[in-house]
Length: 51
Image 1 (cartoon, one colour):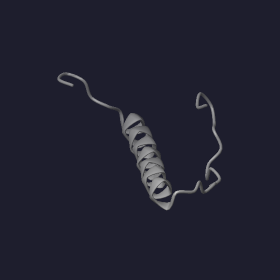
Image 2 (spheres, one colour):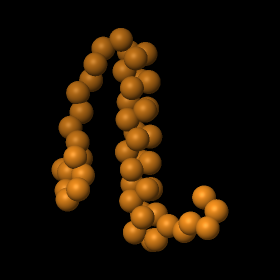
Image 3 (cartoon, helix red, strand yellow):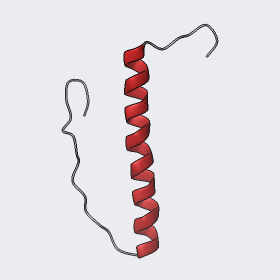
Image 4 (tube, one colour):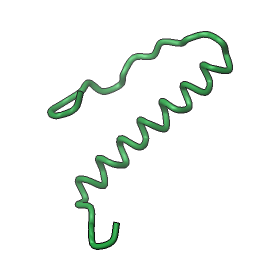
């Protein structure tokens, strides 16, 4: 990423999305080891351009 800098808003958004992805990965690994699917609700509703 030479020559490119993230704005503070982009950095926060990237950190937030990285956290969500990390949590989902852990959830998938744990569920695969339990052998059963556990349903969890989303903590934050999608806003703006999110899906």
